[in-house]
Image (cartoon, rainbow, N blue to C red; front, side):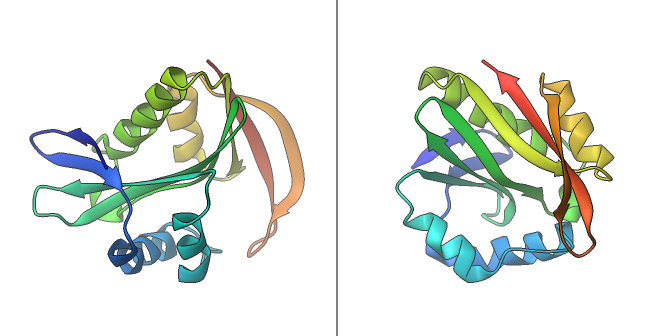
Length: 153
């Protein structure tokens, strides 16, 4: 399903054919990346929403996956290809997700972010997320605290 179609990008459901590109973006974005099997399972998880951003040529340049659990959304992954960062792609897919959550009656959006990932924290704070708790030693490779952030809708 196509969610957004604009002059330069399209946001649509991730398909199985997109997974190799998802994994490549994941590997460049995270030190402990998800595997293709983990992403594959999200395609068939009934509570998972998994959307990709493609440029005008059809190239995958970013993605988001999140779960809808009753009246909460839990962001699992959000990443943008390194050559498309700081161009509004992360904001666009995050705002599309937030708009979806509002329409669907979701009350809270939650996520975890590495304490050292200042760029991601700034993105989330820009749209109203706040740190609600710290999870010590949550991440591996390297071991690092997670900041749990929440957005009340």
